[in-house]
Image 1 (cartoon, rainbow, N blue to C red):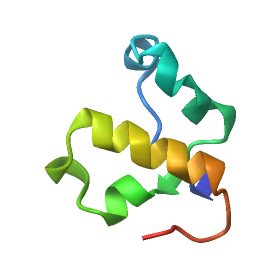
Image 2: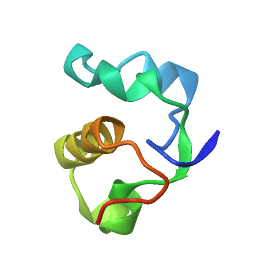
Image 3: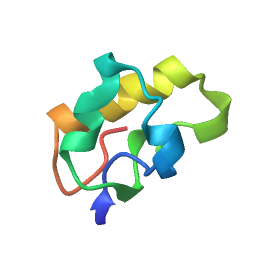
Image 4: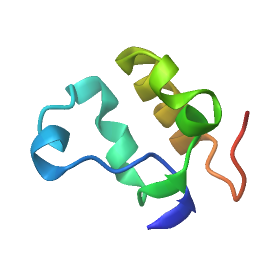
Length: 65
């Protein structure tokens, strides 16, 4: 696990993530992500996945808010 990265899913839930969002699994899961920093549960699933993909594409030591 890394400090910044997509939040991990339970295994059974991870298996149900649509293919278009699979790139989020290319990096280690993190404790903090843009999804968490931008309001977590106030965001819908699609926004959550888009933020995760943006984090993967812009991988760095700090979260981009």
